Length: 75
Image 1: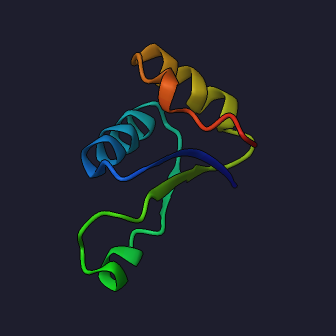
Image 2: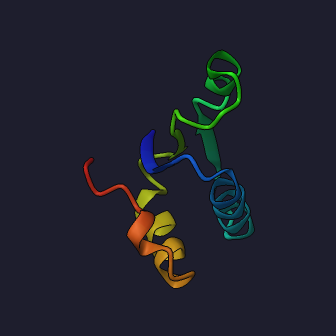
């Protein structure tokens, strides 16, 4: 699994999950349960992971939706 994005913006996470699902790419939201520990105030970023095999295609989908600036390029 590779990290595609990391953000505190839950709307962005939901939108990207929908984009990926529509493209046939399975994603996994990580750290979503951390909001319970932090009191749901949104200070801890959440990650969206995709399989290593789907990472390049997921990046293309993100760039096609003009969201390329959110792609994690640290991996």
